[in-house]
Length: 155
Image 1 (tube, rainbow, N blue to C red):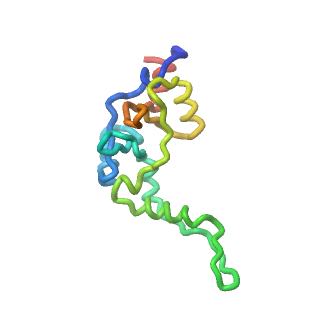
Image 2: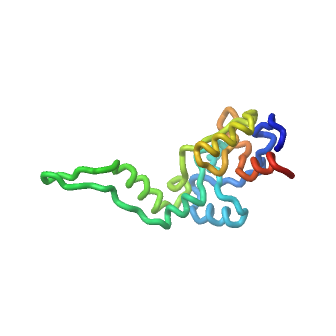
């Protein structure tokens, strides 16, 4: 096992491959394949993190969209689940730009957060990577599961 006091800045990748919301989805797919990564942070022109796009987002596009469950009662439609889920899935399924496909809810850490916090986020939230941002939410690095394993078990 590695040193217990490692911080995000000690294990993060600093040269992060990113995309912009205006980029085409095909660009993200190409970058994921070329660089053998499973996700890309999405940043605006100022370098601020605005989302993340992953292999899972691209697979979602291929899965197709299932309409919301509903029933007809006394001539009216009653939805059995939130129709907003369908709206969101449909929007992402037909996305051509990263901004329409990306996940906007991103779990982040600061450079001085301990590695244990990064690992807890990955385990608790089921994410493969955690972007590292400064106080202005500018991307400064990213920690992947591989980075955690490397720091914990070897070099």
